[in-house]
Length: 75
Ligand SMILES: [Zn+2]
Image (tube, rainbow, N blue to C red; front, side, top):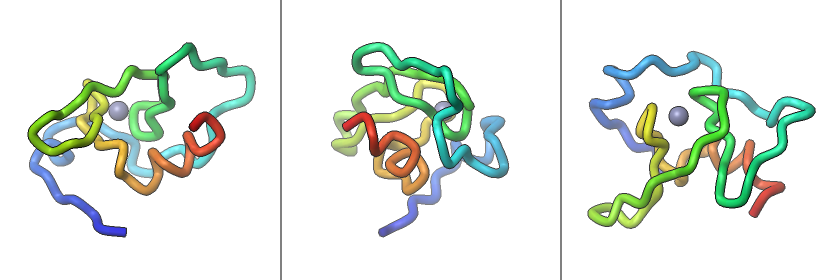
């Protein structure tokens, strides 16, 4: 697991402690994922330069440990 440090993570407001589970009662639509840092469902946007998808709000990539963890049931 490699962690990325990017400047955006400093600029944006993110949860200090990312969600570890999608809250009960939340139903994601097709192609939506739960952003554990924004605590909301988002459509991750393709970042062609880096070959990943990113949350449009906090810019976290889908390679992030917690993004994977919280969304693992949905893949
Ligand atoms: Zn986010």
